[in-house]
Image (cartoon, rainbow, N blue to C red):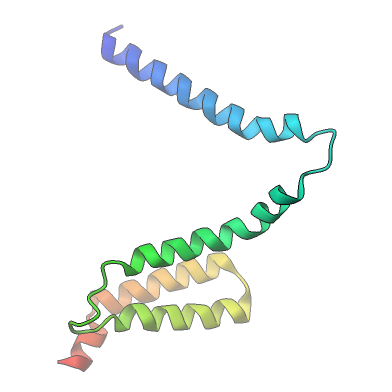
Amino acid sequence: MTNDLMHLLAVTIVIASATFFTRALPFIFFSSVETPAILSTIEKNLPPMILLLLVFYCLKDVHWFQSPYGTPELFTIIIITGLHLWKRNAMLSIFIGTGLYMFLVQYDVFSILFS
């Protein structure tokens, strides 16, 4: 085997081992004791915090002072917020939100209105 292949194999083994042990450690440590309250709090609140960070990340490059003034982004956020509050289905919100935003951006729906 070449050095590149050996390097690739070694990196894959290290990454797979690290992933396995980080997934297995909580089961090993907390199998006989009650889960600490802080971990329960993190488990409950981490997904919404990550989604909020993703929203901020997606909005960082919006040109708020140029046409269409962030209208596709804000319109999609409003629609998806309403849809999610109504249906409470994350996958539906993700797929509808992505599709709606792509439609609005690809067909320049709001650029036509502001020109």
